[in-house]
Image: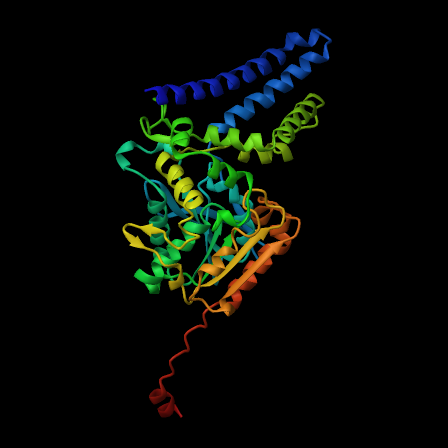
Length: 426
């Protein structure tokens, strides 16, 4: 119960701050306050507005916000977000552009399960939607999943990816972003042995910790320094009574958010101070740059305890993927069995979460793959976010990824000509 009490206490603190912000905004906005010629009143209203929005967004799943898309015919076509595979811990969804011919490139975006929702890749989806059929893994918030649905660790995650790839078929091009890169590599190798016909056409790994020991970061240092007992004691809590997953052991998204914020505390503090002053001066808007970024950044989700702990222990501490010793459902996965799936790695030169060297290690593990089917790219000056959603992605990385996909496209089957009918016709 102490873990549940801690979870509810943390939620109560968040809720209280949201209430304080709403109260301050409401009091300062009362018409009678206009008779008090004090700029502190305007600042109070601005502080309340920013504070209320900040703490409210922490428990709201963002909307994809992709409603229409302008195609080559010059018309706006509706975009329907359709669930094609539904599972307890995550769905496979498709962005279906109505009235548009099916695109030749079929891409499966594997979104990270690292504290944020899949909507973190919204801009990535929009950039690929131009000339691709885009599918994405939409992971669920663990706090909303009843205990009766069972466990979900990295092996279950890998098997989910296997099922999604099987559903989409062999013409799929998989793009894994950050955390899922090692597990996506393992899922591909698993298919190479168990169901070769279901393997994807290409696999692009973007900023993923394939070999965390290849280059140290604050993330890898933390993983090496802390013990599993310490992690379980300090990071794991039991979902409180407010949500459907009551009683489930989780790594709370609010704790993950606190970790994210602490890494750049001064920068975030300045961003919120500046936003309060912009609201005070009437220069802010509902969808300005600050709100667009933080509405997404602050929206966090809980991870199951077993997923978080197995990730730290097996991916970061034991380096099972890097050592090619990963086991899924009792089957030892051999990454060397990947022989005909083209693999590309993408890293950011300034990535402080997954430093250059960690992701490219995947190519050395693919011992059964010819060099002609391997590629790598290090983007100069790019940080972690930029390699999949920023200017570097839009201007440089996205074209390289699509070129890589096109270069490794399997040739279409030749048309079978009925020679008998053609001869008789002649």
